[in-house]
Length: 105
Image (tube, rainbow, N blue to C red):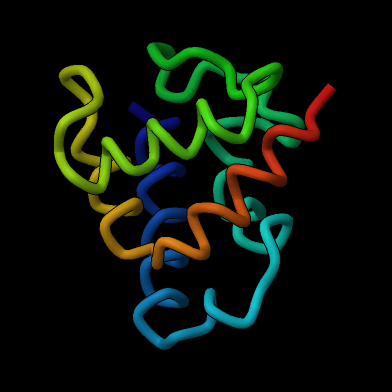
């Protein structure tokens, strides 16, 4: 439960930044900084203990999932958190963060 509260706080900060238009001027690394609390510095964590680690995924795989979250067509029973985030990211920001995530080794 504590991890979920931390993730919610981080996501709230991301949502505030996106709603102020801050994400449009940032690169994928900066956007991803708000994801670290759940996904880990290099995408090594299973967010909320259920997701696949991001590490090792291609940009196309990550982007497909982010777009699916934004459309509400991807994700399991805890997809609400990611849906909320993905819907607020502009397509270009989803591309940037997907490209950044694909660099994790």
